[in-house]
Image 1 (cartoon, rainbow, N blue to C red):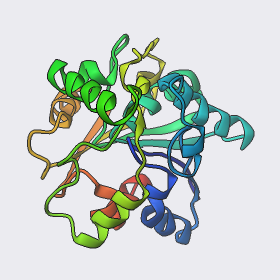
Image 2 (cartoon, rainbow, N blue to C red):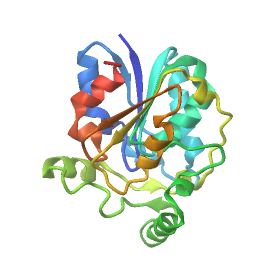
Image 3 (cartoon, rainbow, N blue to C red):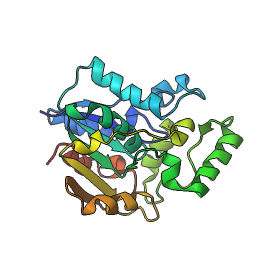
Length: 235
């Protein structure tokens, strides 16, 4: 049995992992799916003060209160920012660190730094127009056109606007997360133009990393739950 903590992406929640978590639990693994402050079932806690540090604290609180030790930590998309901060502080407790088509920040970088000034400006404009300047609605086109209607409806109906400050806050990293011996980057290869190809290229030839690809769109937990579960379980 393996203990696995799954960190969701922007606009998501613990609900994002339902199919994957069901598979893993059926196999006997212990799975935790925290929802960040201001999203999912915790959307009522959203405020202009919620930032990346808040979401890192959310996951670290789970680790503390559940007394987790020797576990797998995985993050999807924006969740890569979160797990980087968590792992930098909790690295001695983590056996495997997995980025699932996720951002891989360096010290002093924000998510907006990794997406570039044009996308950052577009995000601020969208938040100004639709979210009182601090809540970011899901951008048009962020869900793959190849996704079946049922999956699209599921994601759109449960998704909530994302606190913009979590994307503008720069992450402070000591580098402890890179001391974790077993690190994995999984690229969704049918996601052309995404910022995640750069991170897959970055780690491909580095020691201490396993580089994998899944032939699907960005929402791999929806399109390939069995394959995603197998990677998380180390199969």
